[in-house]
Length: 230
Image (cartoon, rainbow, N blue to C red; front, side):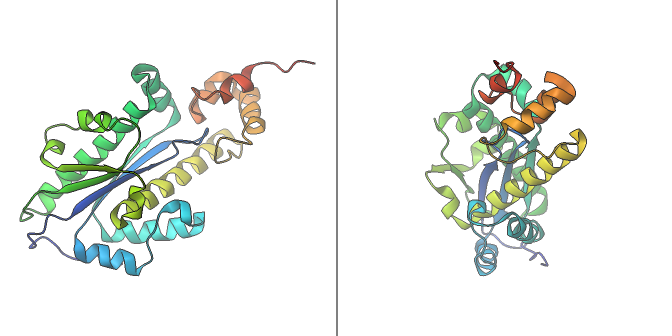
């Protein structure tokens, strides 16, 4: 899809953010931020862009390409090794989520400043509510504090947030596939039915390999590395 040229428009548009991989034992945590004006949101709706949880993996990849081709966006991928380090430092998943959302928002705002110099008005950022709203508010730096932040329950019902959810989910799936190839083991999605794959990983490369492909603060890790009783 050819991207419209919005540089001459005064409309501030909106940024939507969402994440994928938060509840998955294997694979990265991915956060995406998408900017769209009213015209772009109409095009997204016409393309049947919707929350990534409502579509198959194949459709998610296809719609994510449509979003990326139409809208300015930023995607932050935190692979397990970095994720595990950040969790050990921050001690809180919602704090990490706030940090990751803030980085995506800040990067996109910086891009918009250079690409859309005529954009006027207060820009609204719409994000899903994940625990205490203060985590995201505190993580935003100078550029982010110039925008109006709205954290809502079921924010993915908003078109611009649904667009971000597709980019995040597609990024997660690509990351999971990459890690599967690197370790030579098919890593499943989700947090259930992962013990078999986890034990294969641990048998092949020990806790070091597990740390490379999995979010090791999950209780699943203890089940994987604790020897089975006869």
